[in-house]
Image 1: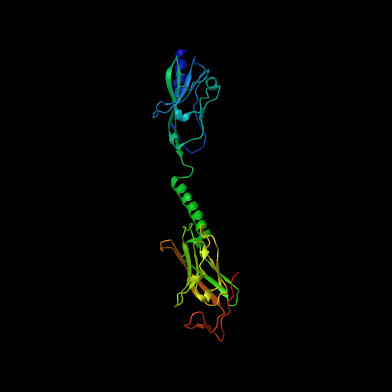
Image 2 (image 1 turned 45 degrees about the horizontal axis):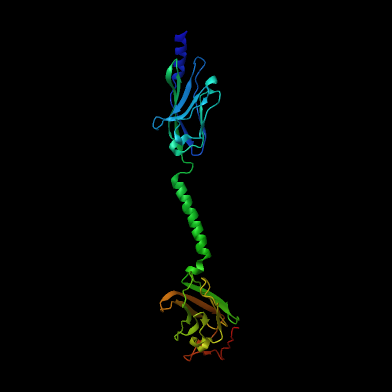
Length: 294
């Protein structure tokens, strides 16, 4: 009778390793079956030979014995409560990680047979999204976000602007955007790019400087008052009379240029207008009428 029991046990031991491919975050039941009816005090052990300690899970008839369990498997393994009564010795492994790729061995220990190796299960855990795909996704997100930011703040980075209006409009806004707060004592100077290089508007020491403004632009310009806040250094010009390029330049207290941007103003519908070399005059059969900004 004893020889028959040993023969039955040896038949169950002759199982070979099987390979299984899974993904990060999955759960999997590592299969292992063995007839335990002839055993008196069996203990089933799941282990990995390349770990220290090697124990992945251990169970006796009284319940789990996890004192020697490897820390990386804490809270991720379980077996059926009646495993050693039914012979269903499979191990449930949850939240699979890349480091779980290995060969797992199911063994049984008992006073009558000693320790016997029942089966090996080889797991290969793969990334659900490969590293290159994650990097590509991050790059695409960064490109989309940075593209959106650049579009939203495009006026802050442009070195020049183009503005077009119809002849006869009351006023036009010449845009100029600053990226950072301007230091105390900074000066903003608007110039036109005619042969005269006239000062269109000057703002310094928290106030306009009309005495520095060319006579041609007297009463025709207006700027926002707070230069300590980053953003708008735009100039309102009333009325726009000629197609012209205007330059917005910001200087620090020492006179060094902090920022310089150009605005090309196109006044559509002009006809037969030209400048004389006398400042503030144009010739089209009449004089230019200008008004002040309140």
